[in-house]
Length: 291
Image (cartoon, rainbow, N blue to C red; front, side, top):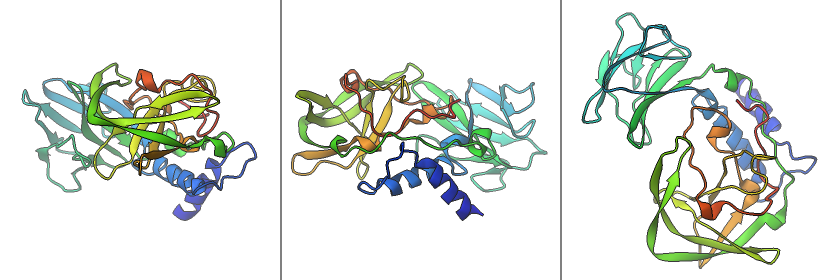
C-alpha cells in the first residue's frame, strides 16, 4: 500500500502543462520532493507553532492548557523554559507518550540540532525550535488534513535555457548578509560569494546562503512570477557548489518554501539582491491546495 501511495503522489507531482519531465534527473528529483513532503514527519504534517513563556507551560488539546494544540491528548505534558534557555518536559501521568522513543516520564528537550528531542503520543508529536530570541514548540500530526488531502505539485514547462552556467565570484572573506524570516526577525547568514549571469542582455547577481560543509548552496529568490503564478514570498533553489569558477543554476528546480504549504513554518525571505526583475517561468508553481 505504501509503495502504491508513493507512485500515486509521484504521478500527481508531474503536472507540467503537457511537457514531459526528463531533464537532468528532474523527474526523479520531483518524485523525491513529493516523498519528503508527504512523509509522516514532512511539512504537510505541521499543525502548530507555540511560543513558550518562561516557567511552566501546560500542553494539550484541551482549552485549559497554556499552549492549546490542534490535536493530541487533552492534557499532554508540562514544558518548562528556564532563564538559561534550558527546556524540560514532564508527561502528564495518564498520557501514553514517549520522549525520544523512550518511556521516561521526564527529560530535557534538546534543540538547535538536526535531531531535536521528540515527544510523541499517537500521531501527534512536538519538539523545540528557536527563532531569534523566541523558543517554542513545533507540533506535527501524521494524520493532519493537509497531508491526507495533498493536492500534488504543479510546474511550468521545462525550459533548458533556464539551466544556466553562471560565473562564480568568491568573496575574499565570506560575508554576513542579513536575512529576514516570515516572523520579521533578521539574522546574519554566511554568504561565500555570488553567482553572476546574463539573460537577454542584462546581468543578474544572486547571493547564496552557505548552510555548512557537505551541503549545497541555498538561494532564496523571487521574480516577476511571485504572488502571481508562484508563491508570493519566495522560491528556493539548491545548487551544487561551484567548480573551476562556474556554478550551474537550474531554475527548473526552483521550489516552494515550506511556508507555501503551512502557516506554521518560519521561512527566510529573499535578500534585496535576490529579488529579480525578470519572469522566471520555470520550476514549481504556487501550491493549489494552499492553506
